[in-house]
Image 1 (tube, rainbow, N blue to C red):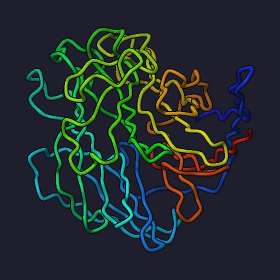
Image 2 (tube, helix red, strand yellow; image 1 turned 90 degrees about the vertical axis):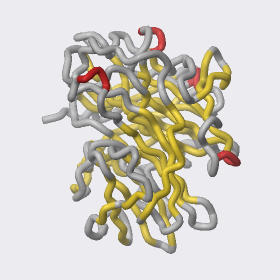
Image 3 (tube, rainbow, N blue to C red; image 1 turned 180 degrees about the vertical axis):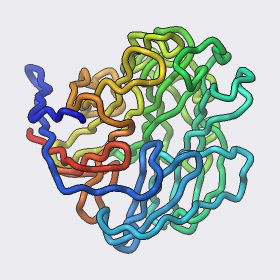
Image 4 (cartoon, helix red, strand yellow; image 1 turned 60 degrees about the horizontal axis):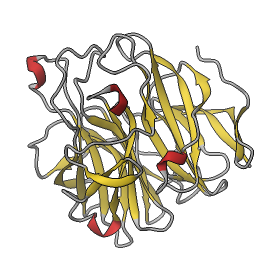
Length: 331
């Protein structure tokens, strides 16, 4: 069982909002959920993806009335494992997506990999995708002595949001390798005009600027790990899910927190806020909203046009593909 905290307050002298986690009727996604589950609207119909190694797609009138799962097809299966974790739809209906990929053969160990983040595009509302290539990867070599049980480094477990000024996509992801000062939740950005040609056009945030290449570049974490992912006492936030909350007029991040043994135990789910994604050092210190819980918290708005990246005052809270709660924000 998890314990729901009835009221969470994140405040400073000049910046304050609160959120309560309130019970709601159960909604369960029928697909296997092993990542963030992104969505978009087209012709008054909601499309949603879930992933567990390979993605499936649902569509329906709203989040409560989704049809049967249909396997997503790819024109290129060179990178077999794909978790589609974020999507964005252009005004002409073209769907751009971003996926978490776990390459095999890392460290000659079947249980260790080093994830990368790639881009895809669909011209049929997410039924089939073309692979545009890998756009985010970690610096350095995999640490084959890593003790977290899954990753020997890499960049993955992410979400993507478009800034309100429509200039940049912001990637929020985990860096699982390198020096402890580089491990934790990090960010990168890409100009919207590069969405069709993303390889080499994603830039990581490093030392207060967007100067490092997405492929192998250095980075400065937003939330640095306290205990490294390569140790038996990992203590780190991970799996950021970010949406723009139009009620608050701010971006909101939900986070898993793993602590403090191997196997990624879930200590709790946390929340953070930011006004301007171009200034990632202003993300507020995460505050817990739930003890324990499953992996992959995210919101889903219930109105037409609401998704996992845009929501209002009281979106549904999903954890591991199931919602028994809603978040109620207050200014």
